Amino acid sequence: MLKLLARVSVLATLALAAAACNRDSGPDAGGANADPAQTVQQSVELTRKGDVAGLIEHMLPPEEFARVKAEWNEKKDDAEPTAAQRQKFAEMMEKLTSPDAVDKIYAEIEPDIRQFDSQYQQQIPTIVSMGRSYLRGLVQQSQDLSAGEKEQANQVVEALAQWVEKTRFTDPERVKQALAIISDSARQLNLKTLDEARALDFEQSAPKLKIAFNGFKKVLAVFDFSVDEMLDSVKTEVVSRDGDKASVRIAYTLLGTPMETRSEMVRIDDRWYSKDTIDKLREREAASGASAPAPAPAAAGG
Image (cartoon, rainbow, N blue to C red; front, top):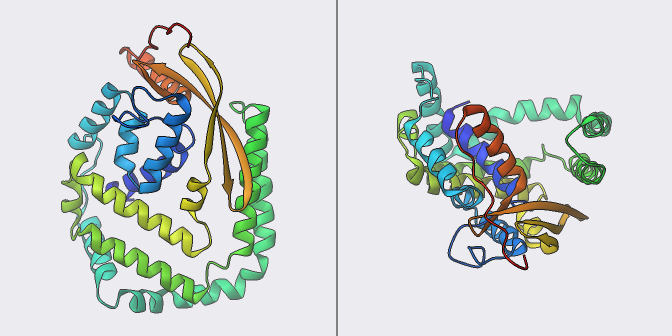
């Protein structure tokens, strides 16, 4: 997959996940004086706005965010695209941004939609059941999840399975609506060539990420999955706090199903971070021999 689109996909996914477990570093309600619950809530608000780049900044310690930006701008890991990749990107963007994009693209995919409906639509309940069982098996076998986390994961799997089972993703009108959103997003991105996309630095990419993520949310909404409704339902509460450690209860509604999870957090330099994020950073830093962020001294009274 093209590097820019891959980054957009990864960061969009990260933003959704971060809504339940990350922090803010700005001078507002989620800043240095925020408690852990406010910190999580600010992450939710950033995700609601589609501010993916801002959320990435807020979820990382300053030195780590600087590293991410530097690596993005240097593009050290990006292989030089081939002529075929350049041509494919240009053709895709031209097709998506053409005045009659929806009609043309739908005409191309309509035979595949009809074939899917005739061959697989009636089998969807069986396919979903198999997928549900497979995912539950992965959850059960996981060595990294606690019993409570496994229960939460299974609830999410069930909610998503029910959504997939009852949603007809090949409905012509919905497909056309989704295509219109994708086409509009492509026009807003205003990237005609792969080289233009590769030349974007982190700051230039930020508004593009916002466009892509908000377009992604709108497409899901067409198929009755409102990310914004889920985010608006989030309620946070600090359930325990001991010095530089805290646990936050996060209640929300996913596709009509009430959910609850916990986010373990740590305080570093007067700001709260997801413990999982910091642990992973420390593992990476230990492997590379560099220094990792350390918790701040415990404040009197927590």
